[in-house]
Every structure is written in C-alpha cells, then in structure tokens.
Length: 141
Image (tube, rainbow, N blue to C red; front, side, top):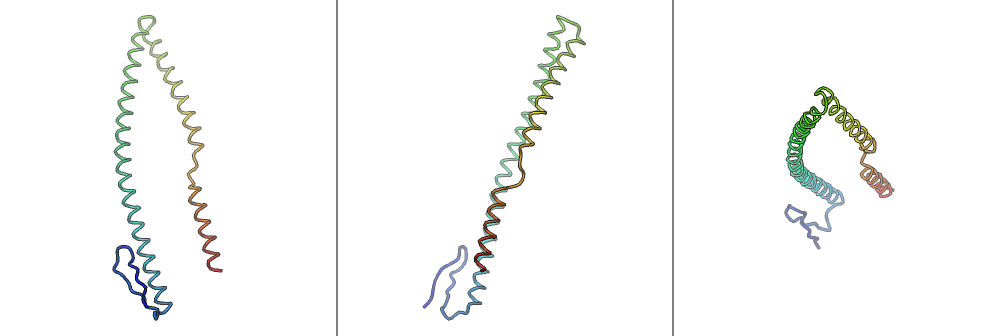
C-alpha cells in the first residue's frame, strides 16, 4: 500500500507503509524547509515589485514638492511686491516671512503630534507569534 502526494514543485514521492518514522520525519523536514524557502522567495519577489512602485511614486512626490516650493516662492515674491505698493519693500518682505513662519510652526506642531501617535512595533505580528509559541508548547506536551 502506498500514499502518493507530490509536493509543490517537486517530483512525486511514494511513501510505503514500511518506511520508518525517521524517514518520514526526514521527508517532512525536507518538505517544510522547501516550502519555507519557496514562501520566502515569493515574499521577496512581491516586496521588490512593491518597492519599485513605491520608489517611483516617491520620486514623483519629490518632484511635486520642488514644484510646490517654487510656486510658493514666486507667489511670496508676488505678494511682497504687491504689498510694496502700500508700504516699504522691507516691511512687505517681513510680513510675507512672518506668514510663512506661522505656516511652518503649525505644520511642525501638527507633524510632531502625528509622529508621536505612530507605533513602530508590529502588534499583530507579535501577538500572532505569541499564539504560535503557545500552540507549539501545547503540541509538545
């Protein structure tokens, strides 16, 4: 009597009921190792693809930041020159600079608050690993 069951990506392996437990455990260990390597290779390939997409998107966002900065610079100069019609150019420049200082302070405080809310520890993964460890302990007993 034999049991047939090909592992993914390997040739079929026939198990005989006469094989020893050691041989079965050895085959199981080999199959699990191969499965783990295949899963890691798949994860690596998926992450590389996603990293390339993220890199392209980040580059485009960087370009948008530069364009936005240039826009803000030229709009600031336009406002400064428009205010020059009503007051000295030095006062107009100081007003524009003060407005930008307030914008920078608000953005810095808001960004700091959001960063303090970030939890870099992967809580779900840690919990899942704890559950796996508990399961393994109950299997050993």
